[in-house]
Image 1 (cartoon, helix red, strand yellow):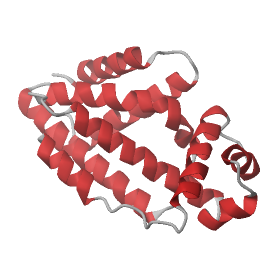
Image 2: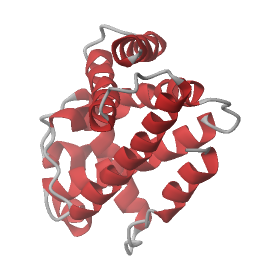
Image 3: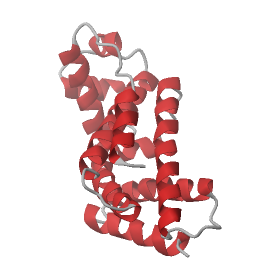
Image 4: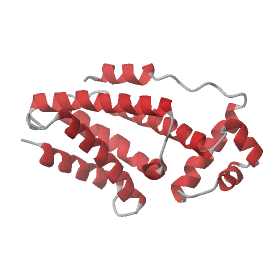
Length: 197
């Protein structure tokens, strides 16, 4: 899949409705991401305090923790889309696209690793995640065509493994065991050596 195709997916995704007070909503969302990155079990009261608003203000924008986590997931996917699109601009091969995507996405784990342990029950998030996996599936097809992934490796197996390597890298970054560049390199090596011909 080429960069234009990725951008089609990126722009196809609908942005959430604009709230009445977007600056307050974004302040709460940013506070949630910052707070949960440090303490995944943080309460809504802690998040409201960090945002400089009361619980009532937080609940005007996010009716529940689940709504807040869904919004954080959407923001994470927005950042993944933007980082990936920028990284792929002049990539010449599927292997280079995979490498650049990992290098762009894995550093986001500093902000979004808490999503690894959160159950997100939101239709819009599920739809976007399915689109992300579909993009990976097309990348896998291109990697197979180049011979970077063995022809007998099932497409779904390769997609799940690429996705899992990102989540594992995020967990390792959160634990302080790896630096982003090293994590991206290890993920790429694990994938190409494990799935390669």
